[in-house]
Length: 124
Image 1 (cartoon, rainbow, N blue to C red):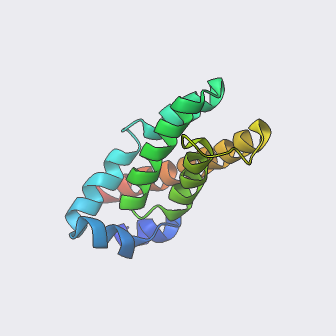
Image 2: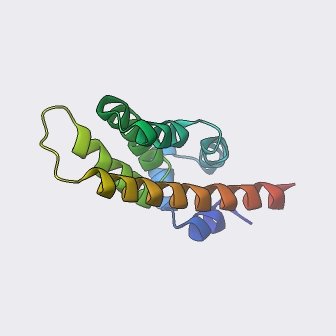
């Protein structure tokens, strides 16, 4: 499996990742590290407590990392949560709606991790 095939499998935007990271070797390196960097775990943990500051910080981190890697679905979901909890913004979503979005984040993340693991196995 190539990096481009991985991106097709996980619904990522390879062109976006290349435009940020510039070379495929860096895309490869960072997509492999994504599952172990902990940002999505932090967001899901923040969702357990529904702590507004923790949700904002974690969602903002996920948004940035996933946007840089061309993981647009994940970035879009994290962006919505970020804006919901951005200081000074008025909340528009209920806690249940946030929990539903966090469940979507978890599902998208699991799909990405599964694809990356398959990709890593194909490279060995």
